[in-house]
Length: 297
Image (cartoon, rainbow, N blue to C red):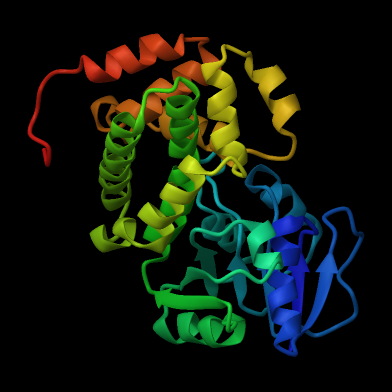
C-alpha cells in the first residue's frame, strides 16, 4: 500500500511512522514541493496548518484517490471545515478526518492512544480504520464527519481557555467547571451545524478537549497560560512557536453570525482576550456574571 502524506510536520510524521511500522510505504511531500512523487497512492493524508491548506492544494493536482485529513481547525475567510476545502479544490468526495486526544510526541514514543476516523460513508470509514489502525493506536470509526471535524477544531479554542484558567491559578473546581461548560458550548455549536450529539462526548470532542486544555505540551494551552500573564498576542505566538490553530479558528467562529452570541460565550471571551486586549480577570468575571439559566438550557 502506497500512501502520500502532504505535510512534513510532527503530526504527519507521527502518523506516517505508525503506517510504516505496519508495512505501508509512506511518501512525505513537503508543502513547498513542486509536484507529487511519481507513485500511485492508495490514499492521500493531509497534515498541514489549516489556513494554508487551500493555497497548497491548488498547487497539487487531485489524484483521484480517497483523502484523510489530520488537520484540526476552520478556515478563517470561509468558516470551512478541512473536508469542505478539499472537496472544493480537488472535487473529491471520498473524504475522511482523523481526530482524538493525541500528542505527536507520545505517538512517536509508542505510548498507547486512541482516536476516531470519520467519513460520511461507512465503507470508507472502515477502509481507513483498517488501513491506519496500529496495536498502540486504537482507531474507532464514525460516520459523523461534521461532528468529528468540528470537535477537533473547537477544542483548540477551548484549550486556550483551559490555559488561561490554569495560568490564573483559579483552582481545580474552576477548571472542571470550565471544561464541562466548554463541552456544552461545543455541543450546541456542533449540533446546530449538523453534528451528532454523542460525537461531542467522544474522543474527538470531550476526549481531545481534556487533553489539550490541560496539557502543557499543547500550543493552544500554552497560549492561554501566556494570556493569563498579560502578554500580547505577537509575543505569545513568538514564544509558543509553531501553529496554535485555536488562535485562528476562534476568528472563524466568532465572526460567524449564524451562531448567536449567547450560544458561544466562552469563544466570545477568548476572542476578546486575543484580539481586543481584554483582561483575563475581566473575562472570567463576565462569564461568571452572566444571567442565571438552567444547566441544560
